[in-house]
Every structure is written in structure tokens, then in C-alpha cells.
Image (cartoon, rainbow over all chains, first blue to last red; front, side):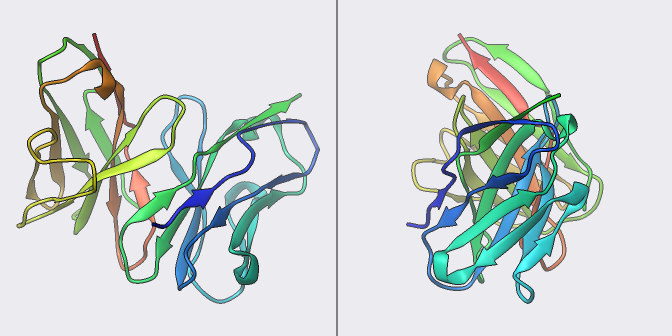
Length: 113
Length: 114
């Protein structure tokens, strides 16, 4: 069965620090990859997505993610975090041609002012 | 994208009762999904609700426990039947629009079963 692993469950950073959240998936075929964010008290929002083409994708609020096929990874990055980035981040994967999306367990990011 | 609303936003229910959760979308969508997010865990897909056909359930979820209706392209309901405390969770509705694979989520329904 397809699985998605997020290695960091809870990350604490100071403002202006750089962020990288890891995401690995188990499926070897064509994949569609996503990062979702859930701010405190709000619903899940799509941060960015990768379907094909340039493996470095840019999303909203200065976030980007890089798809490395050989490593089955889709890590999320931001060069300088802000207090407002405090949220829970979910990596998600859909196998090509299938509608089902599998979510990782999420990473809670806390940014300290 | 799509704007999705859910009712109720939260509820506290007694063991053995049932609760129906509504999901309304502001545009017509072909596919709607129901997820469960238990405390401290990730999202788990319960079923895919397709208009005009029966819902497709994931392993571990059955229609008798989680009946789903999809009467039109903008609305769906999920019923949590014969509830037990293990059903305490956040239930989320999501939709897929257009030809992409991304899904858009509603605000969720926080259910507590006592």
C-alpha cells in the first residue's frame, strides 16, 4: 500500500530561520504531490502542488518544494519563516491516474517571535 | 478552487445515536470525498461520494456505519451511525475540481461521542 512519511512531527524555529520539512512516499510510479497547510482554527488549504515538469515548485507565501524522484521525496522549504507560518503541514500523494490522495501524519511548526 | 461549508461545525453526541453531517459546495463538482481525522493522526479517507452512483468505501469503512448520500453535484451528507466514543474525530468533506488531482477541503465537523 502506498504510504507517505513525514519525519518531523514537531518543529520549533525562531523567526527568520530557514525551514525544511521532509516528505517521503513509497510508490514508484507516476505521482502527483501536494503540501497542505492548516493554520490554527482554519481549514486545510493547498500550499503547492507538483504534477509534472520543473521539479522545483513554488507555492503561496514564499514556500517551495522540490521533487526528487530518485529519493521519492518532496521536501517543503522556506528560506525565512515568520510567526504567521505557525501551522500544521501535511504532505500528500496521489498515484497517477487515481483519485485517492494519501496524507502524511503532519508536521506541527511553531515559529517563535 | 471551491468554497465548501459543513454543518454542523461541532457536536457532542451520546453513544448509540447517529449524526448526519452536511457538505455544501458553491459550484458543481464531480467528485466529493469524506475524510476522518482522529486526534493526533492524519487524514484517513472514508469514502468517495459520486453523484448518480453509490459511494466507494475504503478498507475498514462500511456503508452501514457511514452511509453517504450525494443527491446532486453540490451537496453530500455523511451519517455516522450507532456512534461510540471511538468515532470521536473531525470529519472533513473535500472536493476535486477540474482535471487536476488537488482537493479542496471544508472546515470540518468536530464530533465528540460520550
